[in-house]
Image (tube, rainbow, N blue to C red; front, side, top):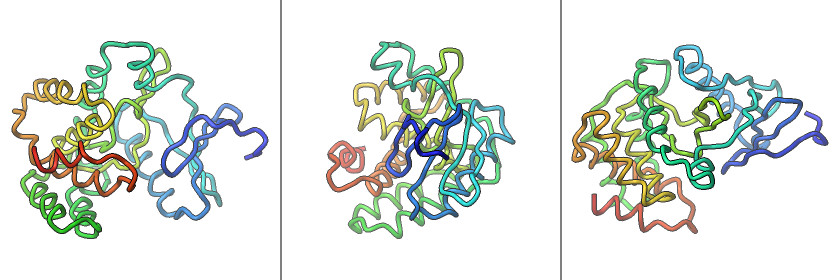
Length: 243
């Protein structure tokens, strides 16, 4: 890319997204492992090729730390809900999640395997680690497609259609775990919507609320692993100890 033409349009914990000549480029630090970047491309295109979900194809830019993708000229669902005061954000989020769960047995890692390894290798206090492992053991293993980071900010809207972005965490798993992950994120950043979300999706999928308890506990422990030292953790700890 010509650096003089870069326009920053998005930024995450690891990567930055730039617009250049009508396309978007997700750029990682030079120290970021190329194998991880290529695996993210593999995940994305596995889902593109085997589903009809509203997502974008990826192209790895050879000999670089960049991924090229189509540019979505629009807003995320967070902006639509918070700024434009859109009232059906939860309904739209749940509708997209239900579409994701329709697919099974793609060539992706099994969530239970990854999560058990993450918990065992973490630096968490052993008592918290045990809570997470025991809770995960209580959740049935399934092979549905799960996004594992689906929330308002990972849903783009171009004024006509939605697009689900950031599939780097996608795995095969039990939808209850994926829903629990979304609930945990909402608990952090949209607290007032979190319980409403859980009640709505449990009704949509005809799942009793009690069925989510162990999954929420497990995903809260896994969320704790991701968090930096300066992030407030009380809401996550409440889920771990009081769910």
